[in-house]
Length: 342
Ligand code: ADP
Ligand code: CIR
Image (cartoon, rainbow, N blue to C red; front, top):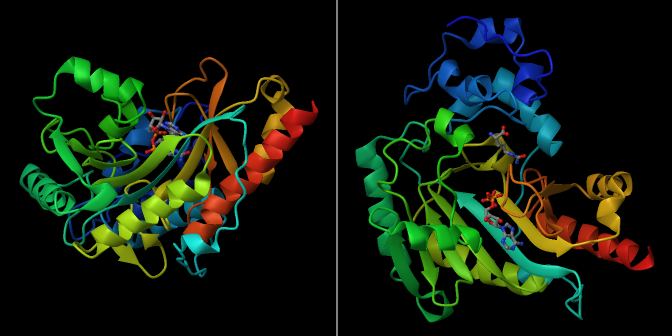
């Protein structure tokens, strides 16, 4: 493989850190599961408008291609090579007030974590047989959950287009045909092995074999961040007793995208801030300072519709789950205070 030609205006972290020197040092390397540099960078090469542009194939990818992953991880999470990750998922540590008592701003709250199974490569290079096996194991574990987590598993294969589109529109299901995931190998054999589990109220959901083997989600209307976190913490604990997830001391939970390493947690609110969102500079100053990311109404790479923004923690590694959700709480608190004064 030749050194890729990136357009001049390419802003991805891949373009920034894949120098010819790094490329030459890594181009012959292969992980034990057969993942190469070419595979790792294909998404960012095919999609120069990526923000990151690189995916892992397995836990070892982060060591084998460390010359490229390390600076990307450091820039995204502020986490250095010798830093250590920590975990704290205890909801009793959250001293959170209800942020939006009258329901003026926050429409809904969602917190998800990504997980992958120990003993399998990541979705970028998993074989069909292994992916089907992961689906079976995850499904069986999920169907054993009881109480308020009890639910049903709905495979994507065989699901009617109407049901699928409604689930996507209502923010419950992953979208289809994402070009970033496509180029990373994550859409192979779609829709086989993919599916969604949810309880009746759709407050606890699990995506199976999308970008990560599991995306464990807790969500509900309104702004009660603590309640959403508590449900997720319980669900993750219940699942962790039934299966072992891929993790490392240094990088926490291993995920296919380096932005999700560590806690793999994205805690978000859907929020309307009619005044602040017209003052883009102030909006961005507050979100940046609080380590928050702004996404559109339908998630990553989507636009804001009807004035609804998806605001979430950007950092996920080197901080605990409690700290990650506190980034969201503190930032949203400030956003609402400023909006109210404008
Ligand atoms: P992920 O959160 O897994 O990184 P996306 O950014 O694609 O992936 O978001 C997944 C879905 O979750 C999208 O439909 C998005 O609109 C929805 N979503 C995210 N945050 C919220 C929220 N606070 N309330 C309702 N839906 C949300
Ligand atoms: C990209 O590079 O744009 C996609 N591969 C998605 C990266 C994850 N986005 C993010 O900011 N957390």
